[in-house]
Amino acid sequence: MHVLSDKVVTNSRTHSDWLRRKWWLRNRTTYIYNGLDLRKFSPRAESAELAGGVRLIGIGRIGPEKNILNLIAALAELRKNTGDAPQVRWAGANDESGGGKRYRRRIDEALEGLPEIRRRWRWLGVRADIPEILRDHHALIHPSLYEGLPNVICEALATGVPVLASNVCDHPLLVGDGARGFLFDPESPNSIAAAITKFANLSPEDRHKMSSNARAYAEENLGVEKMVSAYENVLAQLLGTMGPTLFPR
Image (cartoon, rainbow, N blue to C red; front, side):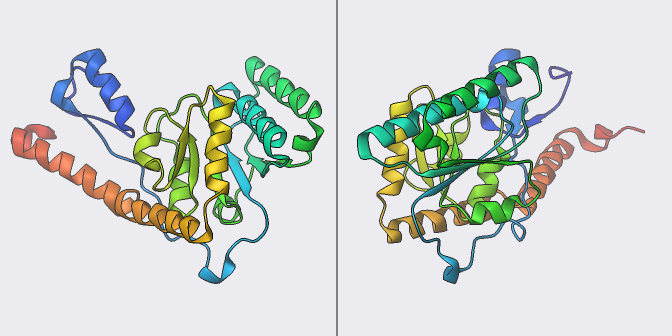
């Protein structure tokens, strides 16, 4: 069906590029990011700045691709090297596949072996209040090994929450290393730890600027209106090329 289509639209540039290479689709592929309700996913009030030590939030199904074990190893490195580590909360369902259950057991075993990290870790389970949860944390931590378009990164940006993410797929485009967060090598606990440290060492002014950058990027690129306009442009281009036979009766 891809090679018979006049246009193939994906929701990430990485996927669009892959299809172009795999199926020789050349100029027939494009990508359009999912649109967000920017009123629902909005920043916390200026007067509600977060106090205390760094709190990180991870969001996603608890499976091997989310790379939680390397995140735990990074937190252990921070604790060893600095004597401290941030609080981490994780919201999401368990992966109930065989591999997912085995991975969750390995996570639990790793945390039990690191009591200082375990005390700083909290499972939130499946939640329906993601905007509020994001606004209650200093940054999103997203160490995935691979992704399509990570909706949670888009949601974090819209709520003005900086993102610490793996340097894979569309993450560099979304995060803009140093502008709206920091990138790291997901296979390297040291790299993850370094990104967390860079964020923790930012001044309040620099964190505020990063938060403002995140929201501004979302307003420009991730709203529903932007998505609808992009699809309208695709259809208009096809209509201009093909005329009224685009939608035959």
